[in-house]
Length: 506
Image (cartoon, rainbow, N blue to C red; front, top):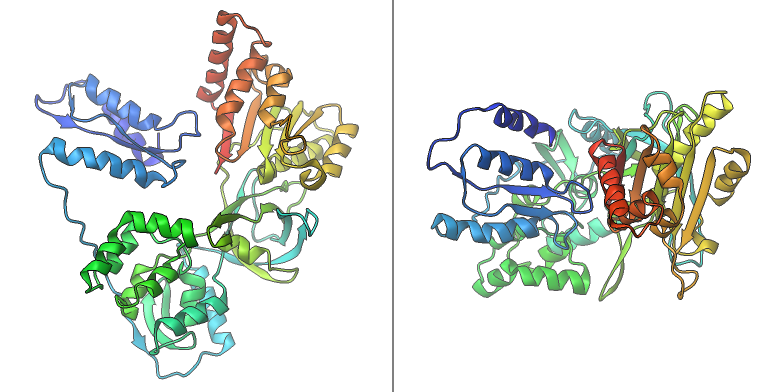
């Protein structure tokens, strides 16, 4: 149950009196189907409402963050059913734009020191609280000629940015300055990146250049949302063009063909041309990107290590690179990142707890943190429980991340077991992490046969479900007896119910 819904559900459960006759309701749930308890909070609320006598007018809606179009896909599908049930026409979506108050400054240009002051004001405001942290190293883990780019990035976070085991580091990316300049010059002859304005928004109070706003604050090269396109359409006078802007199929087609960005949309429909105050209000702010930390704080208190895969995807025009990754791959030692710590979503184990970790690609990061903490504890003479790591990637020769470190630990510590799977080495025999979990007894010994063993899963959304089936195989000792399989499945379910199975997936 989400934190902000716990009191509501608690009140529902405590309620003894039935709802009045004629009370009707509908529930829309938001979640991620790769998680074991998908939309469980919405299901519980719906069940309790029915128990209290309320009439369900429509089946529960489910927005799935794993879906191609994200949560909105399920929401809009559900809303299409809501209006007929309520016997009302769909409301006309008239987007509301509150323009940013902008005053042009007579100043021709801002000095570098003034721009630095503005950046500190923006990033250190109460709603962000980020710090500028120097990079110690940015090292590629794969050969230059290889088509994927894994990196270890080490930052000197020092004593004033402490972290806990299992935490993540949120990095605030920025847009490419040259691309920002190119866009502003193409968009308007009235202003460019050096134009200085006075604003009281975004946590900035005073003068700022448009270069700073469009580089560090506004997600100019992000994917345009349906809401953004609706706002853009309000400025379009040509009805045919307006229809195109509002056509959801145009967005999908443009994304497939060119990876359409907000900047692209603004230049494609340049006749709409929102004025600067509206433009600043329409473009969403850049959001931080969270990366699991691969270092352990007690072993490495002042240095934070990240394991990063440079994110790329393809459209018809060619390969595209994510905003944060495009920035990270260009950075070198001595450069600074604006970042902040974020509490991890997985509860870290105690050194003596049995642990099974399953991770693929850069999902190895939090597992390395847990393992390094166990190594620290062992070296300090503390009692250490067994630790089995199942790691998967594509090709052993190029993507066996931390290979020497992991193999050294396996040789040195009898409590550590390493299992590695590589899916692209043999096209006739693709081996995945879940295959190794299902074929070995580590899961049964560490999870089913103990009361405090923990399982941690990290990787893409395709991993959890087949991994759950692999657990059933290991738990049942590969039995074909239906009763043994049923018992093993219940044991697997109990892992999730008791929060002994936790995951970070994307």
